[in-house]
Image (cartoon, rainbow, N blue to C red; front, side, top):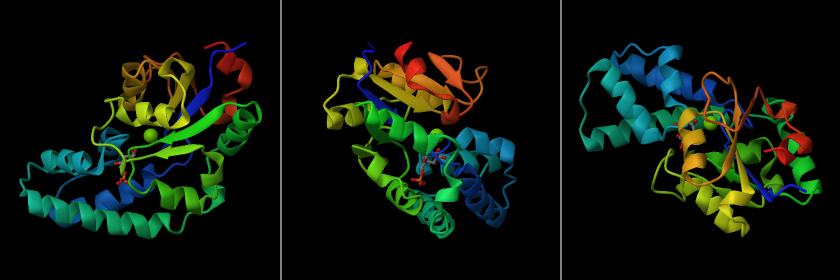
Length: 216
Ligand code: G6P
Ligand code: MG
């Protein structure tokens, strides 16, 4: 019998692939600022907060902006991003994500969302998955970004489950570290080379099963 009582899921890169929309919106902003920003650079923004993402882009271009200017730029990027996610549909759910959440719930395992995004409720609404989470903790509820474990600890608390009884699903290095820092098990979604600190790495939730959860 497994000691796992809850699964906590990151959103971007685990449930849906919004990185492409983040990239388009950041790219548009970078172009306006005359900063060269590539898909390779975009990797560094995964799992990172909106404000920190902007700082990274400004650093890439060697551009300095005041706090007020940074707020305005981040808001502008978010307006473009929200326009894109408002057009998302359930067809964009990553393979196996919905099925694995349903499998967990049917087995009595609680589910939570643990995302840095402040747009998670819009996305879950568009892909019609909000009802599959017992608790939702996102960028609107936390003050410390991953690798700080705050987002996952709040998720465990909301579910009434001890951290040691939780498994986190994460595609970002900072997210894997956040789970470890919170005393939780972690399944990496992506490449074992990149997510080498995770207890198990799979290419997607379509490769997960209750048997694999049991063995963690
Ligand atoms: C996720 C993504 C990041 C993004 C962050 C904030 O963690 O992986 O790339 O910067 O959420 O998203 P937001 O929707 O609040 O701008
Ligand atoms: Mg992610």
